[in-house]
Image (cartoon, rainbow, N blue to C red; front, side, top):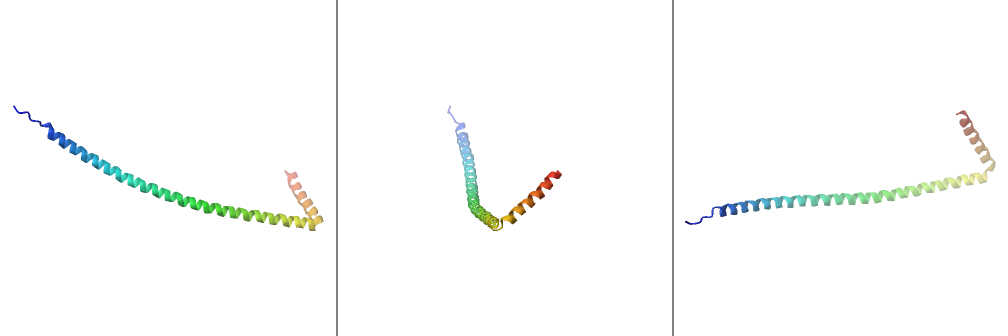
Length: 108
């Protein structure tokens, strides 16, 4: 009696089928990996834009801060000059402001 191997073609068909499934899964995985790479590149671009804008904002904030500091210095010099030029008026103004604040504070 001849020995006929019936399972050999089935194994080949099963192996071929599995190879197709594996190939399809690999293809899907590659596509997803490409999409993920593009998404990460896009996120990186957005992050770079945000970093650049943050740098610009920081520079603007520093400039505004310096302008504010210069204004405070100017006001201080003006007040000091007024105090030197008009000492009597300065004392009377300070006394008047103190009196007004004292009245409001005593009412509470």
